[in-house]
Length: 93
Image (cartoon, rainbow, N blue to C red):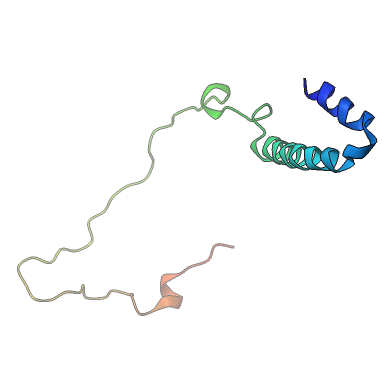
């Protein structure tokens, strides 16, 4: 139906303005659809849940209790290094 309408408008030489009015929304819709397909990639997307095998491993590490403050107004721990930023951050080579 759209092709018939477009052919009729092109055949009539006085309705070139109508062709432009028709091509504007069609071009906008085509651009929107093209950008949507480009950024969504629904046909090329990777389904992580079904296509990826994840092997669970046991948790490694340990927890060691350092110090505990109970029933006192003291809010810090002796020997903390919260103000010694260079000592606290150790970079690995």
